[in-house]
Length: 298
Image 1 (tube, rainbow, N blue to C red):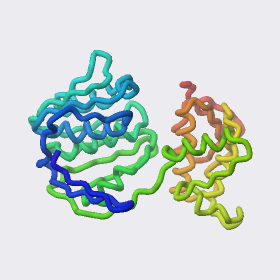
Image 2 (image 1 turned 180 degrees about the vertical axis):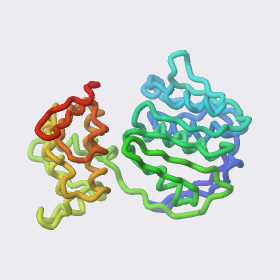
Image 3 (image 1 turned 60 degrees about the horizontal axis):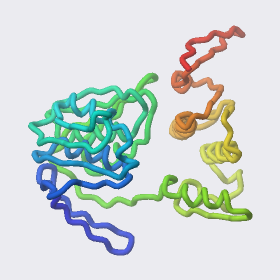
Image 4 (image 1 turned 90 degrees about the vertical axis):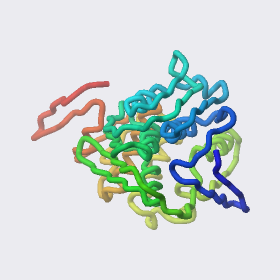
């Protein structure tokens, strides 16, 4: 597609071509098993003036893509999947994408990122509204490249607004390791008797030789959650999990807990924080000794 990429040791040098100078690929783009690639690239390719066909292996071809196709079509993107909403995805040449304000039906950093990338080619701002905060990697990356991103948070929602840029800033990025990559090795260690594994540059590894009194409140809370997960429980009880934490660490702890909920675990927590309480499916409030069920959508 006209982008030059070279590797030296553990560094990749990418020579960008700008927003509107990508070239039409001479064949389909095969993405293997990478759902992230398909969702994010769909956002970028929806703004191009050439057609693209995105394909993948049998696993990727069974994954639903309607959650990105629906909002992209609202931007007047011509994007087609099979009759079940699965890949392959065919994206027709763009005649221009419209501005959009879209409320995420589920918490998904990938859907959000797809729309943010499509927003680079829109004729006006694109706003994504999420009721449960997701990973903010794309917001941080956009800002690093000089793209205007406004984030406004209320008790009920978080709004991310992207204004289409005229140009980017070249910048260097240090990409840390992540738990997704490390999970295969962690699983291998868990099923191997008397094994010991140190995963470097991921999560808390830099604090492995520290005592509990040398850790921050947020770090101790993350370790407490890790200890609670050792036996893979179906139900997790958390009593004031964000007590005495600053706002950033509190959000991090609840992001961990709600990610666990999305993996079919039941999370029961007590909190005085109304912002986090409003995220619960079932909310029970105690006021002056009286118990009131606010909602019970389970």
